[in-house]
Length: 263
Image (cartoon, rainbow, N blue to C red; front, side, top):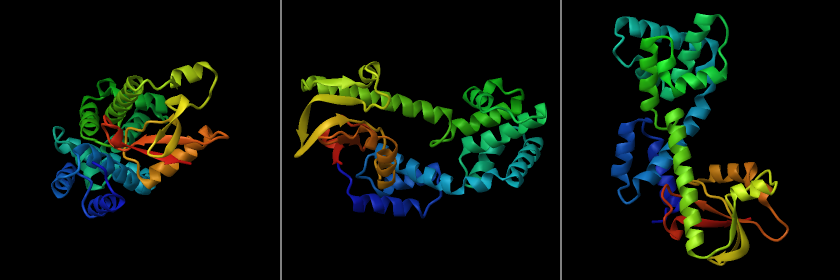
């Protein structure tokens, strides 16, 4: 089922009026029952990430990070079994995984007397059991598993979905006997920036000539389209004509789930 721009804007307006919580996601599904849960979740995630980007700076001031750390310490002293970090993140409308990162970095800095490297922080977030404090390890783990937009768990899921979509797309091309070069083949030929597939013989889709395909396993709003254009798609431009197919839903098993965009 296609989502019109008017329907998309209605979803966004609804999200602007509710807090970014799991309960709001349930309300979103109840409000728009005709839309798939995967599509609504993708839009929900994108709007939440926009909110985090707008407010990110205020959570990383020295005053804010110290305040969060002291609140964490007082919270676990009072009740180490309660989800102190997760509740703190929800209270200040900040992503749980990012709140965990702030407190973890402050903790390590206090332990070692120096600013920990990003490599170390990322490693500990991927495996909280390695954090040299059992209470903090549990608190960080709670944040990661309850964060549906940020963190190593979400990154892993996104990577898996992206790979799955590339496999599905390749199967669709093979089933239709469409000749193509995949991304790994293009890299072997020395291309520095490559789409997922370049068609050796262009095809027509709904009246548009398609030369290459780039699959994105996320909802394509105007903001993300513009970002992809600037970061990737303009570099694919050729003298004839450039085109791309952007997947706009989490499970593009039908060609109808794709939209052709000609530049």
